[in-house]
Length: 327
Image 1 (cartoon, rainbow, N blue to C red):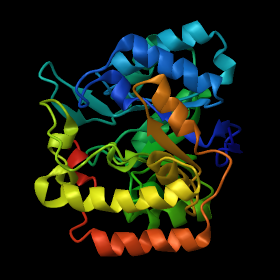
Image 2 (cartoon, rainbow, N blue to C red):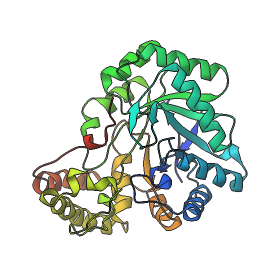
Image 3 (tube, rainbow, N blue to C red):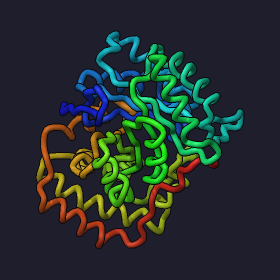
């Protein structure tokens, strides 16, 4: 597994990050705990040492499952662990942003307990909170770093202006934006800014909620509780546009003896400003497929062909805005 130094941190990470939103089950139609633990252990066996999670993923469940897997693995030093803060929820699972220092100090202790560790390698504000000045949140993060509870400070879902505001208040070393073959807004300003300023990036949604895996026909229906029911890409007027594009990507991927998922993740890794790409997995088999992104490259002419396919097939592109929590 390819590894890189993550931005300006002292963390050496795999270029593939194990994403664990699906591990928590919430918004993904549930999950099997044993399958999830097995998937995490398989990732670590394959050299995927970077795990990203958040308290809101299953309302604590994802972090708890990771904690169980880490206990089975037994070597905390092998693992670079990233989690987040700044979202709170009620008994109806209604989510709102809260990046106040009080909330941050509360959440770090809850996450440490669920994960069964004494330090988080990368701690991130999950979504920008317009009701809290950036310097207040950054002061809390700096204090946590001084206390030894976190190693590096990161942000998720921040734009360039918001990132710049946080950089003015403290040492931001990481950004987690959405980015994949179908959702490329970050390549305009955000990724170039991070590249110029030495901010590491772990981009999420690498498989675009499974759309880039090649497993869909465009006729699928999703159950209640699955976030794809709300994703405009999976609506009848757009779904087959994306599926036809993936079918064309599949043909190019086959020339590299790779799956569509591996091809999509490799594409993301080759984009300027991308340090690592997050790929979720329910099972060990999916982890093994994701690990196949390492050790090869897409040729420049095929990168251009990808752009041509997108321009021809996707007539009404949309981004991931539907996932934004209320402020």
